[in-house]
Length: 365
Image (cartoon, rainbow, N blue to C red):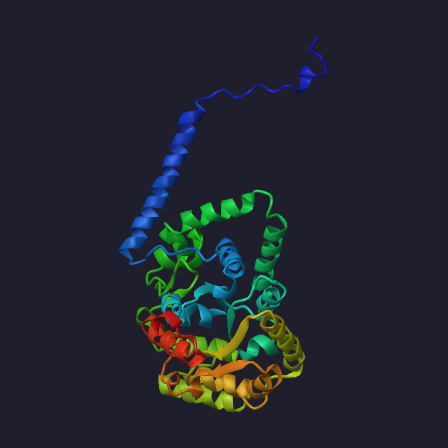
């Protein structure tokens, strides 16, 4: 009679598992190889991975560099408009890219102000909406939570960071992960689509990005961004031209109400305090409203009237602040999508901005 214990025993399946595993691996590698080849034929390139891990590495540099750090905070404009190599050459400082796409600079500035080791120059991309709005903090808070965990576990091998580094290395060598895409997304919009979404963004190793607007259809791309900024799609009538669409959008902009400034006013006091904290230990903080033009500029001006928002910011925060459209050396740069510079202009713009900010390299004088 079998014991009660043995009654629960199950026979171990017998079979040739090694050939099955090897076969499955071979199919997977073949699929990846075919995807990569097809992406290469369609003109796509692998790019550096802009991940939580890559941001943490830059955040660590911001503390370690001390007075030599030139820390960049903001969102997509700071990522696309500033050439780190030119900034390094012109300033004699070491640029640290902490901007996060679509994210408010306020949580990042809070984190920098609370860290006594941050004693360098902090250059912040000013955007009215990031101060006046309720959205835009989610990604920043996720990155900062990871930073807190990393700081608290500094004496313990950080296996999560190691795994992140290995993952980033892998993604940086595969076209299917280019610029943060996922393989299934890449398959859908870049391989299966008859007219693939072009790759016009390229992420660099230092987390900055290049935008090549010659690779996107214009003016469709431009008006698509404008309508997203407007917050609604404009109805397109039969026979409507681009000029008609432009005129209709302009009519809607004229009718736009100004944004509520209550939250904006509340945040100004805290921003002023953060600036004082950094500058009290020898650091420097400057804000720059990076280029915008066309309908994007009109939308921003209507939603955030300059006299109510920008002027109030300069008055209350009392910090170095630059409106690029006010300076002759910066005002001539155009944004193909109304909101970001093409990569061909970012070097000249960065050199001009460094001059306006007084970031000349003493060694080059």
